[in-house]
Amino acid sequence: MDSVTIVDHPLVQHKLTLLRDKSRSTKVFRELFSEIGTLLCYEVTRDLPLEMIEVETPLAKMKSPILAGKKLVFAPIVRAGMGFLEGMLDLVPSARVAHIGLYRDPRTLVAVEYFFKAPDDMADRLALVLHPMLATGNSAVAAVDRLKEAGAKSVRIVCLLVTAQAVEKVRAHHPDVHIWTAAIDESINDQGYILPGLGDVGDRMYGTR
Ligand code: URA
Image (tube, rainbow, N blue to C red):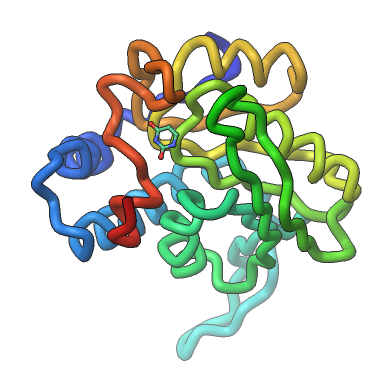
């Protein structure tokens, strides 16, 4: 699957296993989620362009690299995407945030939008959709549609788990959008949950049912 990068870093894989365990407390689940958000952010921003600037150390002047070009916008799909947000903002505090409110119709699994708020300058920013569980692909496609409508020209999706069918759906609708994930799981069940997965992320993060 050309459109997917699997982040196989041992720390990510270790933390994913801890998250899968159903006995993990809400507090620790949230902490681990945020930590994985930081690690995935590191991977997804690996190819950002740099430019050289002059800097004066206490001892000498030198040329040194800083980030150049596009700024970032993190676009969490509420609720699960919020789990990555703080950990990613820890690494890139100057990033803007676009909130995308989507819920899945429980009968059809179709994504329904209830909230969208993004910065004005989307065209100048690299948009990272924070979507931990890419199960059917419906919400991801709707989120990318909406970001592009708002002006986004380059979009990436940051996931924790994906299914092959969801990746294929995103690729069919948005062939320009690359996906980063910690693992590809086997399938989804009738309610649209990833199997073996890790359950309902929003419920496990916020202690709801
Ligand atoms: N959303 C979740 O929280 N979990 C899944 O398995 C799929 C979608």
